[in-house]
Each structure stands twice: as C-alpha cells, then as structure tokens.
Length: 188
Ligand code: IMP
Ligand code: MG
Image: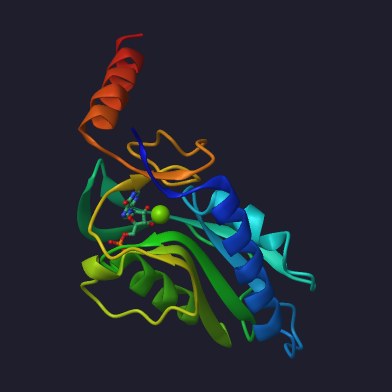
C-alpha cells in the first residue's frame, strides 16, 4: 500500500489557499510581479497555484540541478536562467520541495542579483527536518516532519513519477519498480 502524503484533493485545496495568500501579498505592487517556477519539479504546483491568483502576473521559469536519484549533491548548477527582466520587480520563486535549503538559498541570491525589488519563496513541501541552511519561506503548502523521499505531482525519482496526480512516500518496492523501468529504457 502506498503511503499518500497529499491526495489530489488536498493538493488542490492547498493550492487554492496559497494562491489567495499570494494574491493578498502582491495586492499593492505597482509593477507586475513575476512568478518563477523551478523546473521541472514545480511545474504542476505552479500551474495549479496560478489558477487561484486573480491579479495580473508575469510567469517565467528557471532550471537548476542538484539531485541525483535519492541522494543530494550540494553543488547547485544553473541550467536555464529566467528570461524576464527582474529589475525593480517583486519575484515569487515557486519550488516543489525545500530539503537542505541549498537550492533555494542559491535561487534567492541569484534572483536578487538580477535586481529584484523583493523575493518571496513559495514551496509545495517544506521538508523542515532536513534543513541545513536557513531559508525564509513565505508560502508553504505542507510541512514534512520526517526525512523521507516523496514523489508525484512534479516531484520525481530520476525524472519518473512527475505525472502522478498525488504525492506519496517512495518505498523499496517503488524504487525496484522504477529502476526496472529505467533499466528497460536504457536497453532500447
Ligand atoms: P535542497 O537543495 O536540498 O533544498 O533540494 C531541493 C531539491 O531537491 C528540490 O527542488 C527537489 O528537486 C529535490 N528533492 C528534495 N527532496 C526530494 C524528495 O523527497 N523527492 C523528490 N525530490 C526531492
Ligand atoms: Mg526541484
């Protein structure tokens, strides 16, 4: 039996709440705020949250790399930068999960470097127990108090499971199943 962390319905509800929170936070912005999704993980979350922000926003995405399988590597690499002008603009970085915090720390500094007026951090999951560097988070969907590996709704294991509509805890059987799929892909 899969251990579901967040069901489809729970995800939709929390996205609605976060959308409303963001909408309120940016109510007085004179320049149109920019929502930046950290791809590919934040894709599903960003799309769902945006439905509930009923104000003009710009959207963009950024790509970084730091994970391999279920083990983290601490060096963050920029794979694709934002293409929007962030100067004097409020930027909301949308992430799937904040684990050690290294990725988000890098991203916040990076966006500030682009001249952003304010940087807000929004994450679907805050894996608070795994934090190694402090990062202020402005919008949180769900706080995880156990250091477990989760997948689904954008979150991946070696690029798999992003299309699963809910979030679940990956166990030994899931790893075996996915490793088979990956192996088969390699063989063809
Ligand atoms: P951090 O730099 O350690 O905070 O790592 C953040 C990144 O690692 C996230 O953007 C995810 O892509 C990935 N990550 C961390 N924990 C998990 C997990 O449980 N499942 C899938 N990806 C994860
Ligand atoms: Mg990610």
